[in-house]
Image (cartoon, rainbow, N blue to C red; front, top):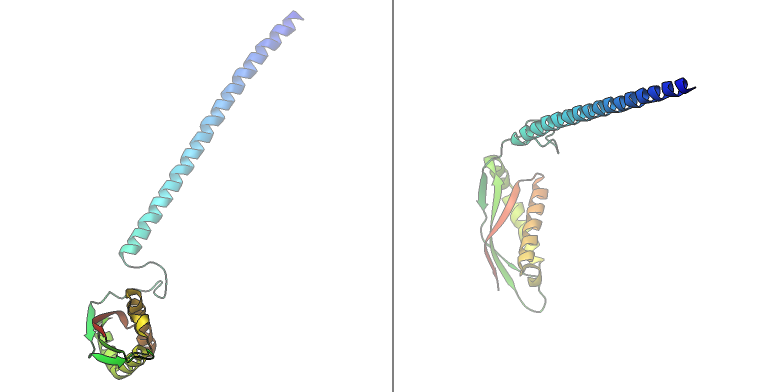
Length: 175
């Protein structure tokens, strides 16, 4: 029996040392797999980032109508002036007048020509819009900004295309 106990102790020592060895091997393999996975994720991420940077540099964001199509180069802005307009404001009780001179920012000669073909309807629309406003609507900076947005929206809707990019008031006098 003593021999059997000594034999069991030797086998137990071998089993515990081989168990530790297996644990170490499994840990090394696990760390190698994690490292390899991390390296692959980093490689893919950097490749996608480089492709995205190239698309942005080329002006293709992959959104909107131009997806998959060549983007038109941005044309220089052209300012198209309009004659000064004087209109009655819609204030009740007092006669108020607005004298305004407006310049429109359009892109390229083609949009300028399109805009110039619609001058009479644009003037009519602007006169109608301005004469419907009260002094309280347009006296503040926010009121003027909202008026610019409304006029640009109405012109682009009238023409049927986004021709007017920005509007500038070069004269704006309320009396």
